[in-house]
Every structure is written in structure tokens, then in C-alpha cells.
Image (cartoon, rainbow, N blue to C red; front, side, top):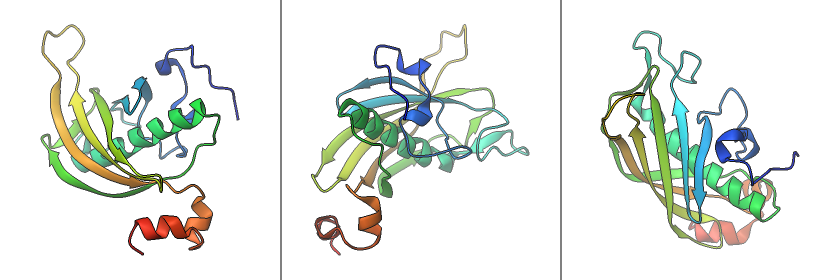
Length: 177
């Protein structure tokens, strides 16, 4: 695994170094900023974007939940790198208060996703407040526009395979199994 240079701006680093996803399922382009419990990512919609719909020349709005989930994964990845730990798989359990204010993510436009950790248990269960904003076009004096919000529930076990095999009792109890 390559050494992550934290003295470089996050935008200059490969997002794949921070998330367990691999192409073609990497949906966010880059990390913009990190601070404790908060991370911001960006994606610019192209014809090569996963889930791009040629007919509508856009990505459907429901893909926003995955932009949120991958941004949460990137936050976990940054934190893992800071601890000299490995990147682990997590699970999207669901969302509450999901509001999609735009019909789609438009071709050529850039969207910024911010995730803020509200709560996390030692078991790996966590809740995040997430927002996605449409950024103004270059040279515009418009403000960014809120296009999606949700509280997202995730779970990241210490040992994914043991959890899937049913051998991580603490993780199972925390989820009510």
C-alpha cells in the first residue's frame, strides 16, 4: 500500500487510497477537506460517471445517497491512515430525513458532499449528517445550492469477514441480532 502524504492537499491524492471501493464503482472524485468528524468531497459529472444516463444527460438524484456513503467511507479511510490502520469495508444501513431537492446531477456540474459524524459506538455503528451542494459555475456570483440532505446510518466492523461469518458477537449484539 502506498504511503499517503498528508502534507499534500487532499485534492492532489487519489481517492482510491482512502476508500475500499474500486473502479468503476468509485463515484466521488476527490477529498477537498478533512477535520475531526467532518469530511468534504467533490464529484464533477461527466459522460463517464457511474450511473450516467445518456437520455437525460445526468446522473439520477438517488445516486446522491452513494455520494454520501462514499464520502463517509473516505472519512473512515483518512482516519484509518492517520492511525496507520488498514482501510476497512463498511455497510450502509439506511437513512433518515432523506431529502432530494434536485431531480438529477447534471452533466458538467460539480457537486460537493459534506459529511459530519453525529454519533459513533465502539462497535462501529455510526450516524452522519450529510449534505450535497451544487457548486456555482466558474465565473458566476451565485451561491452554492443545497440539492440533498440525509442522516445516514453506517456500520464498520473491526473484522468484516468475521462479521459476515457471524463470529463477531459484539457487532451482532449492537445491531440487535
